Picture 1 (tube, rainbow, N blue to C red):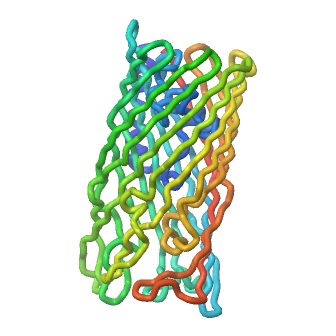
Picture 2: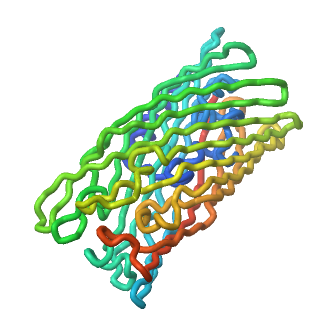
Picture 3: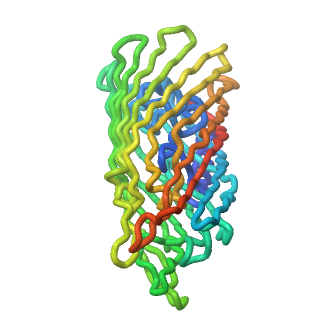
Length: 425
């Protein structure tokens, strides 16, 4: 067992290092809807249904007290997106397809039940939020025509990684409480960078973050077992208050300039229920509120100031419902299915401002399963499909506002493949 945990520490180092470099994710707006293949197979429902370390730590830290064993879970999601933008103005129209590629999103969770104690320790390392797209400048597509007549190349790459140590206490056999800090590291790159003033010739510089920015917050949860069949849970994650993001850019003469942006992750409140009253079945449901409207950057009004700087993305807060079911076929095989719905954070009128952050998903379908090699080792896999959605609105330009006769439409769908290993103590 010592060798297993030494190997796990090595895996943790590799995963966290790789995660810091490469994780970009999409789901409930910018927030990833699930952590790990077990949780993903349940559609992201885990606030009151702890069946894996990653799922337990992701939405409700108090549920780690409900896990039967200490365990280490390492998972990786492979994400592929399909993003296209169509626009028209003045009798001209065109379509451009993005090419962001396929990329991995690793996750890690460790839970340790202290012997003869009410306390359980947990540590989660997760890519919790982000977005990525890459639309080349396209003279046949009016909105992507070269600046200053269009936006030119539109590219974005955002990563938010959270490290979450947790302490959970079982007050009794029926109720547990947990709390812990959340440490967040993030990098956000946007082109063109519209969140600072325009250059003298009306163009915008590209914006590449000068370094990873750090921030923090807190989380807390409660897990209650009212009867043998039912489980209830609730949790809250504070906003992730981030340092000011700093960017190096260029003015109209190619000279250096420094730009800034304020971007925080939103507060999240989750409520959940789990039911295990049917033999070999588990059902789970989560209701979630994600407060984008009051998060810096995401919720600030999408209006230009006198310098041409955009105030924010004007996202609405999101309500989400996650449903999941698990069926145990025998001692080794578990099958899962899930569904997730969330309201759309982006209104049609804000389509133009969100071409670099087109996170317009509303429906997600998931399936998955696990195979237990023995009592100590299991492998899991899951697949999620985000059903294609679209938003359409006018061009909105500084000093002009909505341009009559103009239109821009963004469409996006995505697919997740998740794999993971669980090692129990």
